Length: 93
Image 1 (tube, rainbow, N blue to C red):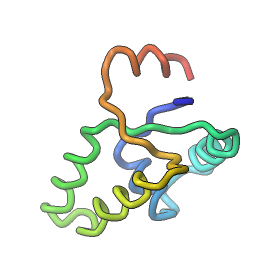
Image 2 (cartoon, rainbow, N blue to C red; image 1 turned 60 degrees about the vertical axis):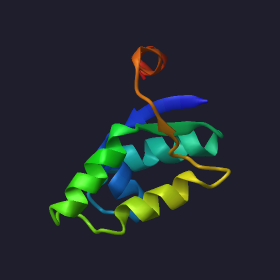
Image 3 (spheres, rainbow, N blue to C red; image 1 turned 30 degrees about the vertical axis):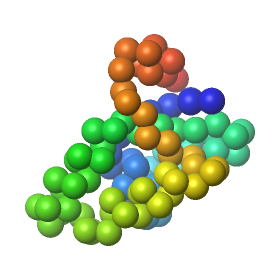
């Protein structure tokens, strides 16, 4: 079940175990994952990662690393097309 939606920086920091990800965010994602649920990211995050890579602000391997984690059968971070339905599901979480 989709429990939350993460922004681009949270996704990047989470997949790389970056210390800039707050303890609260780390614990929230871990709690959601341990319950078998997921924290989605918007498909626009993929475009943002490409842009940030092209500008040299993040590693050029970021997109490859994220896609590899998304393609696993037990992915914690699935990609979703963010629309009204998704907003209504995650409203208030």
